[in-house]
Amino acid sequence: MTPIRIAALLLPAAWGVIAALWTPRGPLTGAEALWSVVISAGVGVLAGWAARSRWAILLTPVVYVSVLELARAAVSGPSVDLPRATPIGILVLLTGRGMHGLLALLPMAIGAAFGHRRPARTRARRVAGRVVTGLATTLAVGLAVAVAVPARTDAVPGGIAELSRAGDLAVMIRGRSPRLPVLLYVPGPPGGSDTGTMRTRLAGLEDHFVVATLDRRGGGASAGALGRSATISLDGEVADILTVTDHLRQRFGRDRIVLLGHSGGSIPAILAARRHPERYTAYIGTGQAVNLRDSDRMFYTDVLAWARAGGRTGLVEQLERQGPPPWPRAYDYEPFLLYATQAYGLPAPPFDLGVEEYTLLQKAHFMTTMLDTWDALYPRLQDVDLHRDVPDLLIPAYFVQGGREMRGLAVPFASWYAALRSPDKRLVTFPEAGHRPMAEEPGHFIETLAALVPA
Image (tube, rainbow, N blue to C red):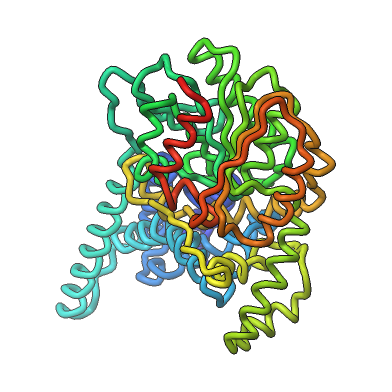
């Protein structure tokens, strides 16, 4: 093999190593995506020219992806682990590696097709090759344009509307007037983002608060903050909330703000409120989590009983094979993610992705980045117990809970709330709501928060 043809293999191999170090979970931002398209196309052109063979169209992407997978072998998470033939596993494969393929392998193959310079032997093959290359190029250019469209949020006349950042964390800030009380919302799952829900269902909060919606580390516009090593901890999540809190206090000149936490996000949120009560006017919990180990074991019992009663033998066998939680990996919790709401007769959680505040990549990676963060953080939350960790709060503590909340969350919450000490403790129950009162009854939720924390 001649040196120039060896170079044809070294080029995609070198790009595979660089990409693994730079974007180990694939391009997550518009800038990363565009650079991936441009560099991959350039590598393809050079590799095709050096190889002087149509085989470069196939071989160049194969070398790139082989080296990429080897170079990022130390990175963990569903988006980079071996694919699984499960509903969520297939979704992760399509939105993770599939999107990466469109942004790297497709332009690389197109570049090699333009670069190899060897015409097909027959006119029919030449025409077919040009048609295929033309269509692929159109697709690649259209995708590049789509991922380059930035997120935006509509202006609020006389108020505030911005997509801001506090360090490496993304925060959407909206309100009818910058003089309203500032409310920081921390969404539920690790790597969670509820930006769409806040815009589509809870926009009315903006009449009563300056609403700051956090994209948790690893999710939404904060996806890149997870990093290659995915080192994330509960104390780190609490520190993130405090960082954003201080950003908002300085931004709006406030000594204290209101803190609202939902579900899994309510754990670091209430710990932030307890450790630094001087920064908060009040803490509001909804879908409040208390003890994840106890909650998950109740979920296991209830979902298993539901599966047995419904004759869902595959699910029964899977749960019995796994045994009761805690479990080490995010995929182990797939039965809960897929079936817990059905088992309790509750509506599926809304994703509300159709808003301009999400870019195309954030929509595509919504589940992938959340699961990667879940995989890194959730096992580290198993020792949390608010009975021990938050026996009291030095600020008002308000809770908005669904009367049909899942037993795994409702039971620990009831015993903890009964013992919690606070200068002003109130519980508001929406009898017909489940785990997400703010999404299931948004109007009632807005009225409740406005009454609990008046302007």
